[in-house]
Length: 222
Image (cartoon, rainbow, N blue to C red; front, side, top):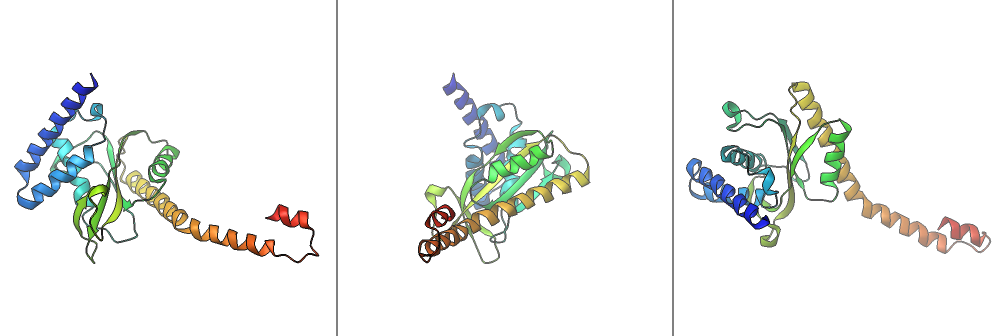
């Protein structure tokens, strides 16, 4: 049964690939096809089989285009309701797109922020790519981590579907909240080694404390 479902998923992805070829051409089509296949690689079949291939194409292409330019060291977040007239695809859910340097705690931190807001998370797609960018932050290539090229940086891309939010103010508030959480995660990940070094230096200083101080108190402090 599982094999049959995976076969159906592959058939669905091939349908999406046909949409890519019908909309794009040349190197752009090849790059988009590669990205979209990797984008959906680990998504459970049940989250794809009932979707229109046009919308699956639109969701993948949207994140690919959104991640095409990013300033180094900064998270990029977009929250919106896709419409065919404006975005070329549609969804019954509000979409959150995230492009960031890969680091621990990203998915948990984002979902915790959304849960804090009492928002229902319907789907999280979280591919990781090795991305080469030029000096302006424009992506040259998106490759899998195992195919990582020289100069490529491991980046985390996220596509999150939540219950539809129709208020522009709500969309902006969610975007601001997610961006704040991502900045907090970056600060924690960047600082922990320096904090650990400070702790180790303090322990070393305490270990050489003058003998006149109570040894048990020193040991307790260490």
